[in-house]
Image 1 (tube, rainbow, N blue to C red):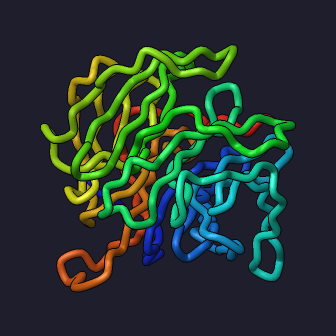
Image 2: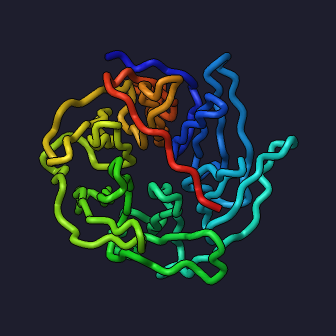
Length: 295
């Protein structure tokens, strides 16, 4: 299965791809560039908008706007004709320490927005990262729901919404966990090891769940996207022509295309000139539409 380059985006850190079924378009962010990107399938037209802060993860609202986690909290995001994103603060965050930002995030099946934080200096290995949940109508600052992570990542929910998956990408951890998820209270519990990624190529990065309930996760540094069964068994691995795939999402007219964003590191890129690009794969299975944020 050959990966198709759909856009040579050259993103520093391409993350949070979300497929819009209504628009038949892919949205994603470039975190350090503070940009929201859009690519439409019909003609390959692409555009982007600049945010006032680093923008880490996004979700579509049912009224057509976006919400996203930026450095200082969760905001509404509205693309403007002049290439800017207008934003409105929904809920602020009091980080565990200075020099932190949001990273991976998405909505649960009920439309509640989850996002995790990390220290900008990932090499420090400080477990200051936490997972936060934002619900419609919330005005008080975000409260940590899960703590003790260095780089929380790989957030995903099973098709029935009853299992939450979460990983830690840091080289010293490289684990994926599963939690039972109470859909009434939005509370994860019964944390257990799902996959030990030290036994597989690549560090665990962004993820998606397909219609069969299998968990797809990017193997950062290995140029692979792995599919694990609900029992945590490796089913298959697909390759992309870059070393650092960052996150994947199902899309396309039949939700049977796997889109993959990637990272463009500094230094010599002669062996991966397409780093930072966005790719499309035929995974052989269908995905699920990404839940909209319930506003």
